[in-house]
Length: 370
Image 1 (spheres, one colour):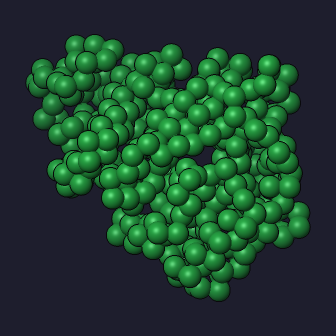
Image 2 (image 1 turned 90 degrees about the horizontal axis):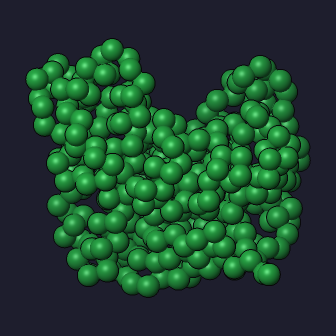
């Protein structure tokens, strides 16, 4: 039996904010959507069943980390990443380009060979070409694959960013060729160009010529201000294809998401809810809470009185403060689940307000609060 085709439909627009649905053979994804990050085959400190119960409909896996440990052949022999980690949700895998930039102290970019770098684990030399990145992602059996790109650090040098963008476009062509054709899997292109509007538009136009199932915006959340990020999105929002999903990579804070949805973005991922949960930072509808703070020692109220899932309200701030200050693993588990759940509550509310045509009101209420 043929697998269900990958499709995207916009159901409602409220100015530039879009309510839509991505259809995959593993299930539908309501957009705007937030993807919890499962870097190494796990969303840290949570069971995948609990991640699903938060309303998460897709997760992200990391090509760089998975190819180093445990290795694509080991995952492939287990039947792919879904079976390996017991996850029935759709999985998007990034190309590994960002980690080459952020983790490898010794790396070299070669136009033809790809990224040549040393593993951050054992120093082993690795060559990651566009073709190899696609091969690895196919081996993982991911549902949405990303093209190989070069993700430069924030840089004000126009020529440096231009050269990097042109390289990413060359690699995008090679990634598309290596991907071939699939009706049930998707390949997304990645718009690069730093903070330079003309480079961003050139990058987008090159990707449109190649043709992809979705279009991501990369090279943001790398040190620029929120104003600079929103300005970049403002300059692109009229030009992004209307019939394809738009994905802002590695973003971000709740206010980042609110502002990006206002500018037409459909998909997000970020390690923030899980990483913050492991360090004592909780996201709530009243703002962020550093639960390690001494003022919570005798506070017997819950983190978020509105949360109904998982009975998380039975754990007081007092108790959580104690768990974190005694380095108990349960502390990370509770706060991580709270944060993922909050992000999904936020996305649910965003979709609700787009549907009724009142997104701007919701945006304005929470943009400076969350």
